Length: 443
Image (cartoon, rainbow, N blue to C red; front, side, top):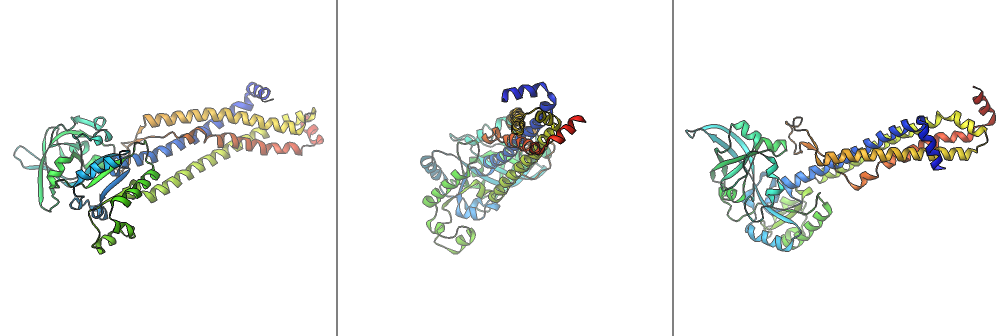
């Protein structure tokens, strides 16, 4: 029966072509939007982890209590020993040390007189050591726009827009004016090895990258460690794993008196209990470090709501398509009933046809939606010109993310909505009587 009905629909394009096109477009929009929403959220988390927080971050308790002002004077003591312990006890993660700092960047002329001066933020990462994973994690080669990557101590990378605003060329020397962890002024000359584009508007306007050891010497930090970041070998952040590791680490490594108190009142616990070791290591997950937990929960719910609304809206459209398609065929159904075909058989054939149309449109629409999602996932669309004045830590390349749900999410509006529309409209078949049938056939 199914084969017979499908042949009839293929021969009569009025019954198959337009409904299939509508289903295809509806499913295509549903799958494409779903993949886009997943990609935006995944890219936001990945960029936050890569550039800011890692999947987990370890600081001292004191540093954590004042993290907004980057208190490098409250860094953990004996950072190399902590790193060695982490790599031995938690080898499933990749560990990297970072230092964030700020200061005034001075560009001077041949007479050593200031010609441009701007406030900058900087990050010190390991560029030369045996564990220089950040060099690859930041993808410095693809972001390099001029010059070379740092090759020797004293080399830095400047954001390309920052260099343009200051009129600095590759190979020049610049002076960074900052303060050491002891509160004294620090002036350090750096050689501009190259210009880089981070792809994040706020960073492209005011960021420099330097080697970790150069920054420690400049800030007079010795073997202190401000932040140690851990990364799981996963393509996307997993909050369940991060929270489990955080609880395990803090129970073993952090100050037991602090952990026994209400850690939500962070600063108060440190200030009012002298027994707490303020420089004990303390781990937080990415969502807690970047204050994104509430936002992430909201965004996840918002994404689900958007996906539901999209599916619901497409369902209404496809339901209406099935409804109108069946209504236009009432004369045909009347003729079939008049020649003796049972009402149940006519109704079932209508449902089978709607399933056929829904399946064809859903498969084609899903393939098109996955194709668009794959293109956005691998290539993306550069929105840098539209986001050049943005102050949010958002990537300028829009990407999608194909998840297992994308392969079947289109079946809900594509098949079930079409089937529902045909089923509801076909109920009128059971209300037809012989007199009305002959009257319709006469007209």
